[in-house]
Length: 135
Image (cartoon, rainbow, N blue to C red; front, side):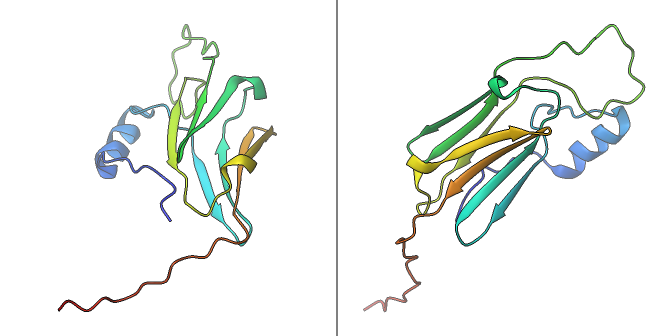
């Protein structure tokens, strides 16, 4: 199962810069969780301060794109001493596994959490690993 597109930036460098300047220089992707249970995958984004109409979720082939449509006013006239969240635009892509029913993907936004439900196909059978002898 491959559900996410990995970031190739070195984590230690990003963490160092973030600790030094108090912000995320790669900015943009809010924290998220991926949960795998028997009936579905669940992706949860922590995105307080938005409305449900601010998000765009698109599926193209086996790719799920999650983004927000609007950038809220960050009141840039303030000089932040430390800033750990903002309302900048973001986009995150996920590769949808074969066992997900693309037609039944749904989502909801409440209490600052965007939840995306990716139901699994009931009759999907994971192919077992089979060794093939080389002759």
